[in-house]
Amino acid sequence: MRIGFPGTGTAGRHLRPEVAGPEHEVPPGPDMMDQDTAELACRRGAGIEVTLLWHRTTGELTVSVTDAASGASFELPVAADEALAAFHHPYAYGAAQEVAYQEHLDRASGTSR
Image 1 (cartoon, helix red, strand yellow):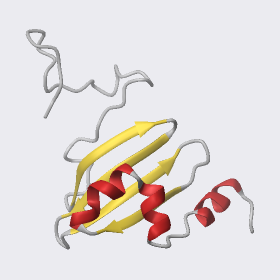
Image 2 (cartoon, one colour; image 1 turned 30 degrees about the vertical axis):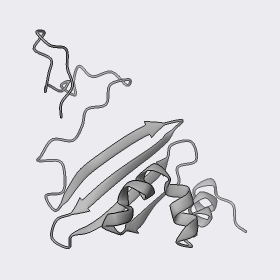
Image 3 (cartoon, one colour; image 1 turned 135 degrees about the vertical axis):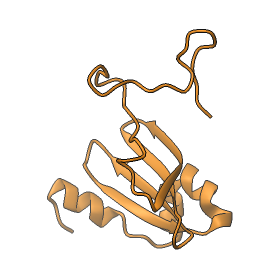
Image 4 (tube, one colour; image 1 turned 45 degrees about the vertical axis):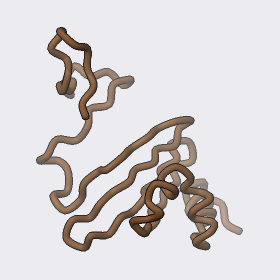
């Protein structure tokens, strides 16, 4: 679904990179995105970006998490029936799956435990 303002011709259009300011992110075009990977959902808030990805050839789903403040990121493989729960609560899901994302945070900040 594309969002725009009815009657203004903005529905379904993206800003060109040369006119997009830092507050307007330009989504990757088809030629820039891996042909095997499709973005199913993405959300951003408080410097955290969470993306639900589908890998076409393997059928695998992953949730990718990036923390802009620390520079840390991690990716979680998820089952289809748990994908939305993992997307909405990636840190809790990662902890339940025993994913050690703290080491990613330590590596990004240059500290060690």
